Image 1 (cartoon, rainbow, N blue to C red):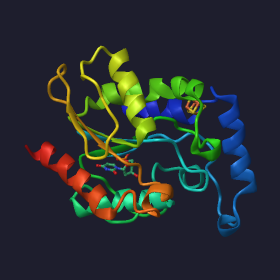
Image 2: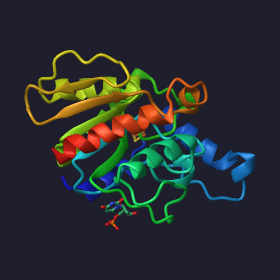
Image 3: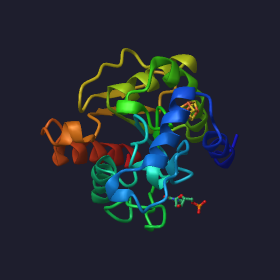
Image 4: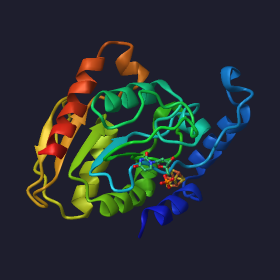
Length: 225
Ligand code: DU
Ligand code: SF4
């Protein structure tokens, strides 16, 4: 399936009742600082270079970030951190990601997430993660990525299950910031693990700007190898 068909299927999905209700409720009630803005309130397709060799996997859209703007990692703090790290490594044309018409273009890079609807407390259930997995799988098969970055434990688990589903051989994947795993089959695939750039991690100093820049620099270096 091509990428546009995948994205078309994603934006019309209503498979998870709890998340459909939540994403729409948030879009109606909004939050004070965005009360005059339209909200997307639907599932999020991925965003970036349609022929990317680097796939970056996050957790799920933020209630007032992607769920508002309609674009992955756009309009919240996580997006600011991630896009800046891409820009510093030549993978984005600008350091900010604020709205769908901000002119952001990614090079060699595609942003996606394990779950495509904003979940309450940023915490999808295991059943929701399973329901959404076919979309990540479709993207995975479209891109056949050379490098994958898993942002956080939840994304790493989604990648692990996907590799298992597809019969890819990875060896054990353990969560540790900065970890790097080379696939045995297919051989040209490398997974990099990072803490997710959520406020919970960035504001506590668990993930620093340098730590995230280093992961993206490594991704870039592998692409250029
Ligand atoms: O206009 P389009 O080529 O269908 O791209 C859709 C969307 O993807 C656009 O908002 C820019 C983004 N994008 C990108 O970030 N990097 C690329 O290399 C190509 C498109
Ligand atoms: Fe569909 Fe995924 Fe949203 Fe569930 S989380 S409704 S599977 S897009």
